[in-house]
Length: 113
Length: 114
Image (cartoon, rainbow over all chains, first blue to last red; front, side, top):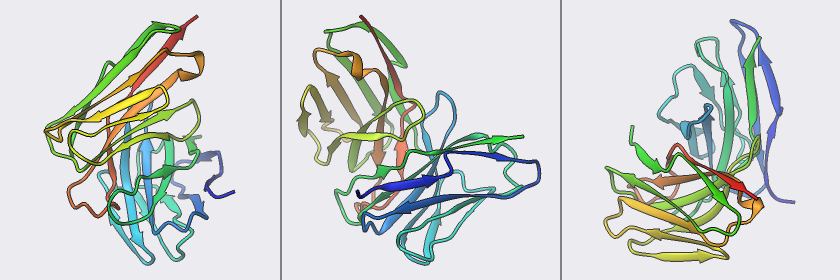
């Protein structure tokens, strides 16, 4: 089935450690996105990419990094510079062009040990 | 960044009742989207709105894109237990390119009492 796969479902990070969240899609979408969700809050945009080897910062990019080496994959690294990384992370993808809604994976919950 | 004001924050209703929620913004959006999120899962797209004044239905759901492009509402008729969840509005930006990030409201938590 076509869809967006995020892994792992749960992730724990030690202080000072970088961790990488995986997002893979087989929908042939050009654009991919990362959002952060805190309890009782809406989603906030971290990074997005409209094409391979190119990406843009969203509203809360500090402490995060991404790469887009393949169309299907858009991994997110939460670096040690992100001082409050505990959150639910959601990946989305869409076609580019007008009138193309974003579809979401099932998320990764990151916690600090 | 841009802000979307979504209300109400939560709703406690009886099964079979109609539900209405809305979002307003100080900025214009080209697209309004409504999503539903269940606990521990990603949001699922319910309705997408692309033209000012557009009224769109999806089963028991009806949503409208405000004529000013700064607001939208979602109605659910004859609520059933599986409607429980958090509903988010989201606006998409100004370039019309369709690949900009979304701006989300904080969600409406719908709770249905049997």
